[in-house]
Length: 396
Image (cartoon, rainbow, N blue to C red):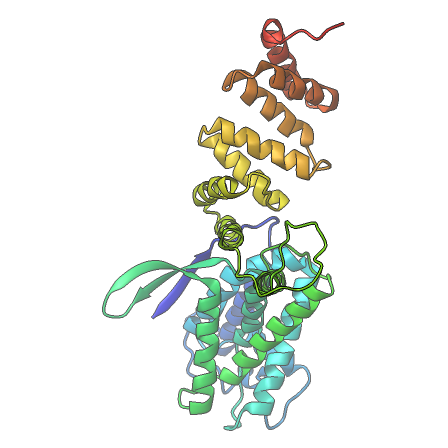
């Protein structure tokens, strides 16, 4: 058995809508059980034949309302807990990405499309209840929005352990399992609803990202495909003799030029850095960045990755390399937000750790003109006052 515990995707806002959906499922389950037993004893023998039977989705007589209501009904406590665990682990980040109203609409649409897949594909003509189709839509969306994240799982069969696996492998594994068991049709689980929900969530998220109706970043699946295609095109061009560092016009085509292994290494190191940043493995990313600079000192990374690595190098007390990373950040992205904070950081590094007082004064003076925070401004002025006698005087 495999149980997911958490993902390593960071949240930028509180996923209230996902929590509300979990609470709604739990309350509906408790209410139905109370109506069946008149008390909370959790005796499930009649639950499918009584109240739940009215709200389940039946392939023989599908009622419009049941395309939504079936997703809030559960057969027993383990059915509920399993669905809510997956919804909590994967839904929080999807809610964060889509916003509350968008996520609610997506979740309900996932329920409808999963129900449609069940009605069209189910061959045994039994009804279905449970949120698993809508949850499958959420995992399909997660696969598109966070393909480079990892899931921490607990596994126990003949032995017990915990392991971090790529979320892509984890979700694809369950999807393939649903496809296999759907054709086998031996376990009584509505795998058709899982398949329909996953395909809906995956496809709609691709469309929303492509139309920029969802926030984009360099780590989603659409960006990953584009990066892979650019690398493929670059390698094809290089293999045909294109030299990106040769500005002189080519007079006539010559024999094929073998690929430059140095450029190939640069591309591979850049890809490895971005992958390490996506995994939040900043020590490894910083180490790879230093290798990249040895190949080409002019290399720069995407803005957030460059900033994360500069901060990591400063935290590792590699001040010379950190100063270079901050300077590259400001040179390539001169309009970056809070640039005055990075100028202050550079000034402090040059003044306190590298004894380059002229460079320190240059960045501290620029920071003073832009800083608004009183503590940061006081720090910059104090540092300027301290190094003042050590700065080379300018001719008047």
